Every structure is written in structure tokens, then in C-alpha cells.
Image 1 (tube, one colour):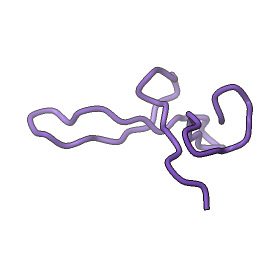
Image 2 (cartoon, one colour):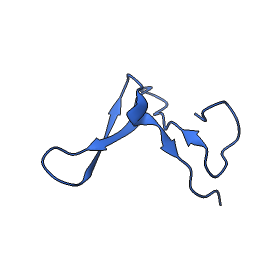
Image 3 (spheres, rainbow, N blue to C red):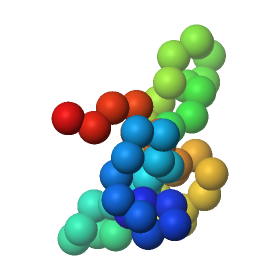
Length: 56
């Protein structure tokens, strides 16, 4: 899902949604260390936005 319903372009914000479950891929700091944790949630929030860096 592209923010603003446009095409996937470098710099676009997107949500990655699992088709069958409707869950969104999200990321946030992992507890206790300096790494990121990736989860899926049926409730979209700001942790679910990703930025496209390059379109091939």
C-alpha cells in the first residue's frame, strides 16, 4: 500500500500488508539492545510505514 495511492517511487512511504491475514509488517526497537525487531500487526500504526529507497 503506497501512502497517497501513487506508484512506488524512491522516497515513497509504503505499508507491507500480508494478503490473507491483513497484518502489516512493522518495526520497532528490540527490548534490551540496539537492534530492530520486525513484527506483524492487524492494527496499523506509525511503526508500519516503510520508505522506498530505490526502485529497480
